[in-house]
Length: 305
Image 1 (cartoon, rainbow, N blue to C red):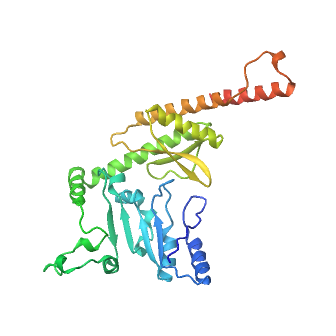
Image 2 (spheres, rainbow, N blue to C red):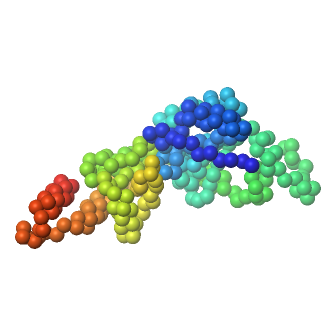
């Protein structure tokens, strides 16, 4: 039986080497045999980057297969300034990225690299007599690389995009999206109704209202139901966060400003709706404490506008 263990991350939502080492020791003390570690460059929830420079040596020392999932963040590595995030990649036994997520390829397109392809193909080889041919020693037979025996010609569309945009064009696209994400981060940080959760590294910004989980959920529901913007949530350390991702190829600073303005206005409406205290005459307030509480709520709202 193969058991899966999910490890804790640090304050920046990254897997660290010490955590992995302790987990290996704990499993071996229980009579288990650790053999595979999966790490991520650009996690789905908040685009955090596991620390490969610490994890890699631990895997090497313990003879573990280290897989690096760069589904989103992997494409950004075509820009030299982001490559420090993958320091330690030389320890990886396999690496994948999805160019359809951050490199202008239409869905679906996933690239896979393995250090020792023999180990992969021997686990998946299907070689009945009717599939054998005389070119076995002259060409790579990709039916041994995955469960399906056949596949679509996905590499063709990747080739076309690289030919049309070139490396510099793709780098410019990624850098522009990262700059726009930073712009959105600045707008959110300057607004005391919101807070940023996690680091903004690529094109994803995780934020939330400085309010209850219910109010944040109501905000996202109202935004998405408007049809003007669409975002999806995540849970980070048990907290509901909203994920703003720059996705449109031709997005501009104006688009980011429009998005922020709409989000900000909607959040303020949510705050207003949450105030249950009516504007009443003094004699309608039952106690002095009620009156004081109401004034406090109104003052809080005033500071947000």
